[in-house]
Length: 428
Ligand code: AMP
Image (cartoon, rainbow, N blue to C red):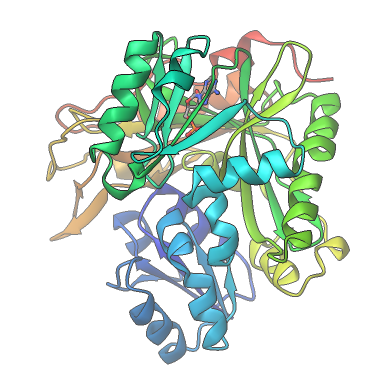
């Protein structure tokens, strides 16, 4: 069996590594991949961009790929699953119509409202119909969101009305390009954040192991927002009672609602949630793919063959399979380049990877490239060091033992990934 992974980040390295581990998989192609996937057994990088759907279809056809798994959201929102299906190729990921759940926050809001799924009260505007009077009548803080894809940067938490007005105007004026043509303005919800990721086949749902990420750059969850500085699994915040509520109040009505709207959802579905004091799981956002870096610790714990789960989902028989999980906890620490999340320096030589490879755990690559046998930095988030342990604290120790061996000028990473889970008693 031949597998194609679309994407170049840490999530895609973990996907490629996991698929390659299946005995029946002969080769995994990654388009375009990174230095980590380039050096992984049974894995080969192919220089095709995730945005080039026609070239990806050609690649999968020419290489007789049996299964394609799409990492990032952009090709899904652009319709990669539709393009592959039209060419008779198996591609695991939602169709364009479903990927709108992530591609348009305005669409997601309307869907949630229509199906009575808990979420913040909101209104959607364009530059033409923006109602400043409505905004002035709202209680602050307010959350202002560019509706389209903005690489996780299109959300402003505004403490005052003026700040909210300014944020919305800036979005209409093109601060996030086309993503800000529509703007969603919603009430601020207090609570604890959690993420919940499932595999869906249009009808049935298979929840993945729970996970939690850290979005802020610095220790204590302070500093600017990032794509994610670390993650761990399981997430004790998702107790079994909360797990049940999320399934019943969010995931099941979402999958049912999409099916009844005529756009059955097959693929990974990620719900970003704010858990209110009374336990209500409010949806902050949907992603139509796996999270990065949540994927890295989650896949470290997955014992089942991921390709078999994806194939079962594509065949609409997810109800006939189960996922087996390592009972241990996994924790990933993201190592970022100097300047991240702003402008970063690239092209620095990374040292210590060979020593780290002799230790337990695993380092997944994100922004790296190979040049004359050396591994160089080539992005903001560069590596994710993942440890396993009998509890989150033990997994944390293993992950930091790996991270501490690796070096390049200006490397930065948080020292406290998982601190909430370490402080909390294990979920009952
Ligand atoms: P989103 O991309 O919509 O998940 O927003 C990014 C981040 O902004 C979330 O992870 C939350 O930390 C925060 N956020 C978004 N919407 C809200 C809200 N309604 N209330 C409070 N925080 C929010």
